[in-house]
Length: 101
Image (cartoon, rainbow, N blue to C red; front, side, top):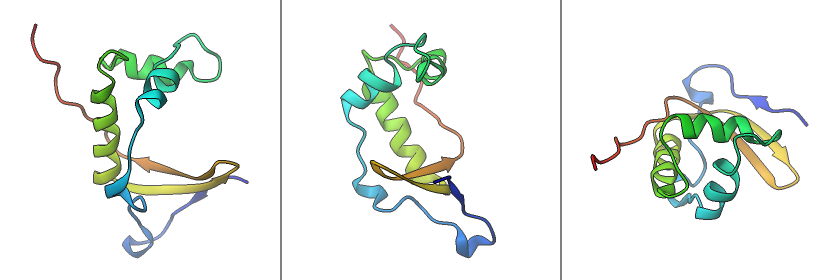
């Protein structure tokens, strides 16, 4: 099944359901999102996040940036997968600057 875009006026827009209780587990970041930039299935995600200064050693920075992204932006499409609903959220992903050494 393909993603279903949420089109139309403001009344059709929505926030991620239960966004206030959303979490991003450490393992999701360190073993998936930042694991291997050379991997054919997920390497582009890892390369993207690493390029912008996110690292597995400071995985909490990426977790907070993703949660903030979900809280501040709206869902643009939904898809049903074997693992449940997948939501796409469009907007800028920002992070606090790294502290100076």
